[in-house]
Length: 240
Image: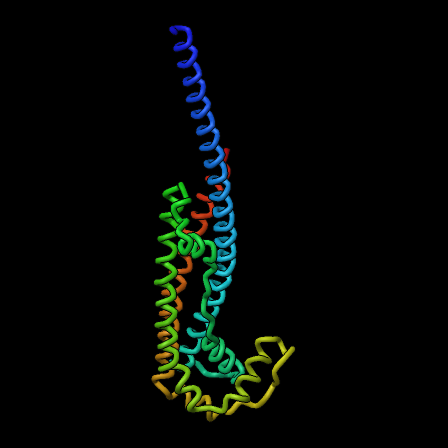
């Protein structure tokens, strides 16, 4: 009986050890698959971030050029002679061209909507993602504010005062180096009317201010996004 009991205990121990080994192997496989999913999300987040970086840098350059045109318009209002009406038209319409930044956050939205944000094990990466989302919302709020200013101070007096057709043709001609548009006569009378409109001038003053505000957000977004990409790269490199 003692030999049979010892044999039975040995069998139980072997079964338990086998179960524990199987569980360990299963857990290891699950962790490996979970890590592979996490790395896939991280790679997609990095791709989205690099797309955003390219767009942010492009928009930053564009908005700086718009600020330069708005500053030139203010100088016209403050007495600098408009020697070439085409230059007035170019800087005027250049400021008014409206572009809104669209963030590429497809992977982040997928993580949130599927409840998989917790798959990201690096707390610094999750924190940076959340901070970037908040910063994008603040930047978009500034864009909406600038759009509101433009509608009241720039678009309305401009469209109510002049014939848009020759000015748009002249702008396109200047902007494309003569490849498109047309070199058409610009009404000096229309330009003089606009230069006497204080609301119109204030629109360009606001354009300078709001573009600078948004550019500051762009610069912060660029710095934070570069940091996020660095964090992601370090996390992926550390993958076993």
